[in-house]
Image (cartoon, rainbow, N blue to C red):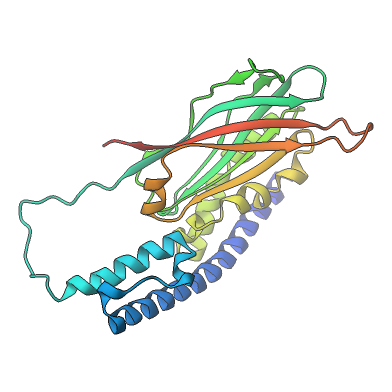
Length: 277
């Protein structure tokens, strides 16, 4: 039975990776087309007179790349070729993702919840980090706050891209099975990267699919309750630099009637940290 499940996970990862490969290749072609058109328009009107089109301005990452391409054309004719002997290549920025705070604002289940956080992070180099936190006993009240200070992604160069998928779970007896599945996720993704011949594909917006679909957690581990999922993406160096600081994500469910005692309201704080060296 275990072999069948492992095989199923691997096949599903490989299939999804192939789909993402095709999708992201088409997106990359579109971006190149838009940037080329923007550069051509800038050269027609004169680069100092150029302003980005509405289509370009609607996407912060695309705006950054188009602006860099346009002003590169402006300075290309005036640059002198030279060899830098003494200057070292500037160090690439390094970032970390840290789960810093869990707050229970409200719930209607008697007693404490045993909650934990499952996360998958992929970066621009195709690296994957899958983590399951310890369990935390939580109850509603202003004083019931936990400070995990747990790193979901270590301080390293993400290659200009980070994609985080995070879920909040309550343990009803399936914690060990979930933790084991998440721990084994990296090997399946590595196999999928080898199969596609392009590990970067795994790092291109696939985190949410991996955490919610490819592992099949909802079907395999029914003992535990999923309180919700969130995805946060930083699509460029500019996004990462601008995004440093705390981010709060809320997981909320309301009662739908007197028979439905399934209310919860939790906040997670995740810090994007720029690290040194």
